[in-house]
Length: 117
Image (cartoon, rainbow, N blue to C red; front, side, top):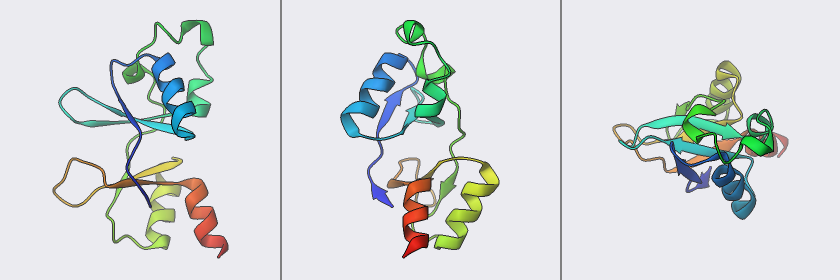
């Protein structure tokens, strides 16, 4: 798990999403609603589905391309892989039971690296 999660509000533009990806060297940004609900991920691949000339007009909330699938911090490697494959996502949000705030994120690349050890 990588501690911390790069996130943007649902009203952020795709320009803001791209900037966050570039500044933090990540390939996915968590989109959070105004009430704190975790809406899902805008991934680099999903961002590329929108023409760059539209990025300053499109909000992150409308560009979520992966649902927010949670695992608990104590989840095993096998459980995380199963959740990722079943959800067809590239990111898992690590959230403690009863919390709405993510502790971290696990990417597909993290799971590949862990599996290769």
